[in-house]
Image 1: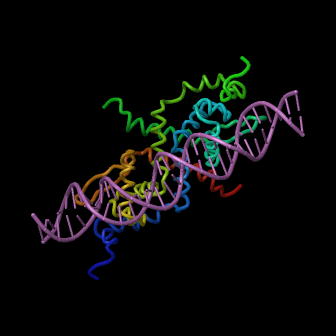
Image 2 (image 1 turned 120 degrees about the vertical axis):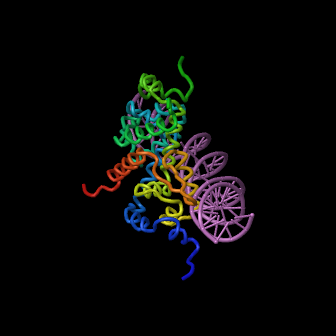
Length: 127
Length: 127
DNA sequence: CTAACATATGAACAGATGTTCATATGTTTT
DNA sequence: AAAACATATGAACATCTGTTCATATGTTAG
């Protein structure tokens, strides 16, 4: 037993294999982690972030959002669909127009934390 | 003044233009919003989320992470670079090995809120 | 210095993503 | 019913993203 698979050598040498055995069972299901990444993917687009910010202020129809963000109605509609599927916005129909609003308080928290993070790390004003 | 550009008709008709004027000035700089989206983009990948989760437990070297997630050392290293650029992890060298750890408490908060969100919306256990 | 090892990085490729364009759906008005 | 309007959606296209492969960098041991 002089040698094993080359790929596995490190795990036995470079640090503590007992950590691996401790951490592994603590990991959430693959599916949960996948869903979580999918959720953040939704936040990870400028257009969608801008839409969410706009909706912080008040509910709004597709056309207003498009006007406000200076984008196509189609583009906004596509993005709203994604936001809705992620349960970040909800919609309400009133005649011809459809109003969108934030669906969830987590949106504010998550975005707030994100903002705090970048202001702390990026935009250091003083020492 | 019977008609204007077709594209702008909606904004004057479908809802309240005064909202547009109220909301527009409340929007953060384009640059801030861009940075925010960039940050969430970093969270929006399964591999990186898994890395962050692993680091919840303890600091760890590249090789251990690769082993734990059953991925290439190269792939992990690439992702760690992205996480580091986003100030989500920091690294410390000890001889040949480099240890990575969470750089920020916002990471825990953001991921926590994300988890809460999906558990609430997705994984409804009962009515 | 050289060998061995842990990590980093550049190029390339496949797959995912956002916008546009054309058009469909659904609602109100006449 | 038809016209007008707000919104939704499918296909196509260009761009971005993550992994792999090969190799470079940096550190320690001999």
